[in-house]
Length: 333
Image 1: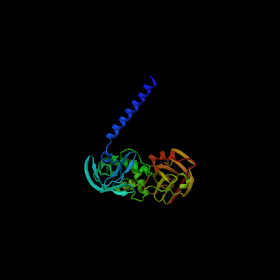
Image 2: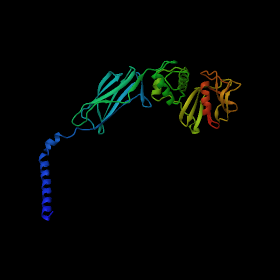
Image 3: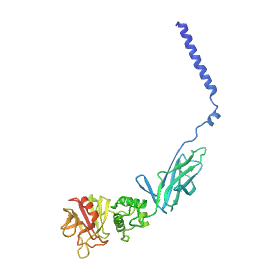
Image 4: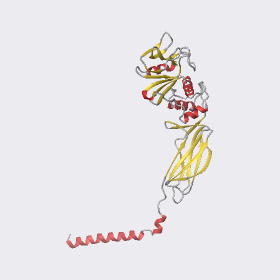
């Protein structure tokens, strides 16, 4: 290719580029047309349940207790309302519209209600679109909530028992697992009742469920400075293992009767004997001159021993394994 041909090729390329740019400018929209094609407003919505008890990824709510649906939307919408629908097992039981209130650059809304119908509870939120806010239709809160009624007592099965076990363990009581109300459940409920100075029986009440769901009713430590240690509260007749302030597990016990009282003070465990001895003491851990924590066939709700700290025989081996030589135990009136 000659120099002349090369120059002509470059000129033709530049002319083609200029022509393409002219076509693009001719097709560009006017300012008014551009405004019409602006993308819709975008934002975010976050809504959640307030009040239910969470265990793992599941939520449980005692029937008739306060329940909240709270949400936050960004940016602050001009619509001013959120429509909330609550259903149990797919059937709508409540549908309300609540105001959206300004909270900085976002908006916050809350609905309060009580649900007595048991089953799988779901909630959806609808917020209408306006020129300055996004549209949210059918926003579903997850996970759903299982609404239940309290268990009555021994032999009961189902969600009400399973969540009772979970709440008792979370509060620091030695409770079994599963969905059946067993003797172990009764002893854990009795320990909760003793700690909270309620009637000393082995069946729950709505008040107990409510307290546990609200994270109330745990046993407090008297001597958190002892680290991982045991505490025997003679006035409430309970024995607890604590990790500083945190109750690890609390058991029912029976201490010395008035004629043979349990010694008071702070001691270290010094000897352990497995099995049942001649005095009927099961899996004993001694802390001072023959005083011990041990299982015993008779375990009344009051102080009735010869000075030792009796515990329930089915739990005795478990306590025996947890109580180590040299570990502290404090006994107080």
